[in-house]
Image 1: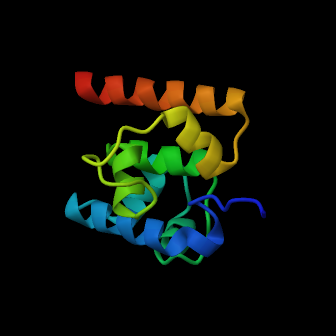
Image 2: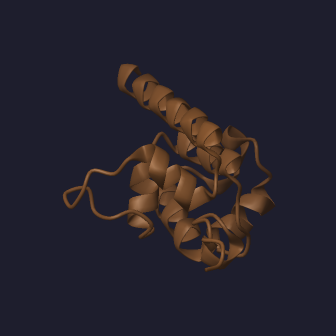
Image 3: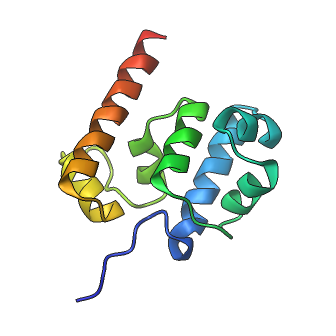
Length: 123
């Protein structure tokens, strides 16, 4: 049994890039502005949106934070999580399996995503 690929791997990046681009356009955010908000170069964001590059968890979190969207929503629309109505998922398990993280890394990432969600609600 081989190592499970992360949704952010280059091989799987096309779906994720398309969703990110669609969300950016829906919010009428120019690519250069989103890149600046996420601390990325414009060309790197272009490669991500075209599915030509993968991204690490840190860049994924920076992009979804800049867009002001729920990371689960992005992953769900890209087809990496089941629809919300079907099942309640354990975020630690999803992070560990989906991103090949240690338990400690997954717990930290889940806590950070939870923090981002509370910040978004209070804004």
